[in-house]
Image (cartoon, rainbow, N blue to C red; front, side, top):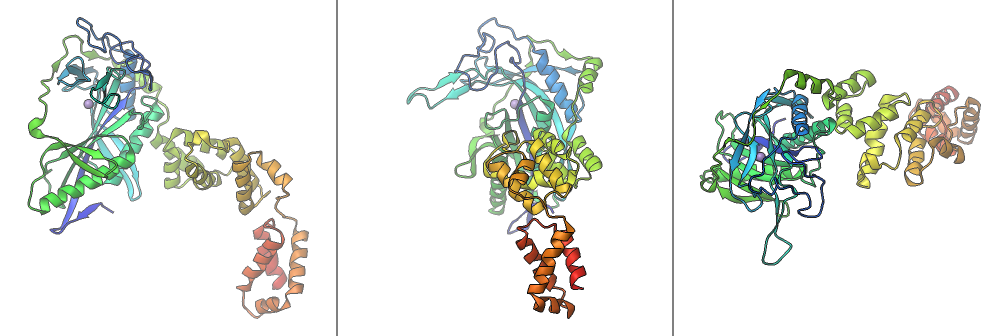
Length: 483
Ligand code: MN
């Protein structure tokens, strides 16, 4: 099921590569001791290094190196024991140094792989590299009618730039890549993945070509997209725009474009002629990073179970379907919540309740799993009551509703409201006998071979018992009595 754009001249394929900037979880910046907390008063977290005062020298923050290596290992990537910081030179008001310290020719992490769980099966997307670099400051245009202010709090904050190969072929794959990458860095604790706060930002390189063509055509780069939904929408718009350009006899130009979420379109920001010549060269203030294999191995030994491994374990140990397992491991909190519910015994039932009933409640109220009105312990108890036949699945939905709106222990709710399932054969038999006696016509229909009438009988018994009769027992006893 491939994604193709139908043009007037034929079908077009989309080729996408993503460059993701992920802010490293670290108390201090990449080359200074200034704090990195989000939302602080402007210019309150700026050291002399971050403000690029003359004579100030950068000092590498070892935690950031560990985090970059940890991320590389989580992406199954090659760790380069030798890497080099370089200066990327450009002038911009929010960049007081006049250059960004980045890595260019020799990044700390080389090629890796991210596996996507697509509906049509797994897809392996290549990671080209991961390098460390500093963030720039921020221009504030909305504080004064005439002037622009600069906030340097972000100046010098450590980033990992993670560059994919041009392996993605649809907006859906790009979205899945972003979600998977975010899940991995969150599991690793190397980036909080918060796209609204800018901890994870995406530049998308997009080009199109007629299906079957081998060469890559000219790409446009869409800068700084800050939500997964926008990444997908921006790519879809841009790909269709390019197809139109070619089909109108034009040529796509290499340029940087911006995505306007309000209008749902991309527009040109600067063309290749205006592109910077960054004049990279090794930063003379910083020594190359030379890691020992021992340092890398120590980090490797502390890696947590990552989404792919967890997914496989959920399939093997709990017997979950691939889709359900993939859904549950998409974020670590959900996976942990599910495992706590599954302790009740029936893991498949637990998965169903988390994915269908709980997610519906959370989505409706825009809550995260951490804010769930029902604790994993209580949901586990509810699942336990279903699997030991105390209540039916139907009644469980009513109990769950009470748990969501009023809270409380499911066993108490069942007790208080008298919702226990009727599994006493005598009691059910008596109900059936009365029903048959009152409805001889229907009973005769059954005996005449119209077995469909069983459904009517079951419905009547369930109604009479207010949904509490065990449906399976009702079915069995009905057959016996009518036959
Ligand atoms: Mn960058």
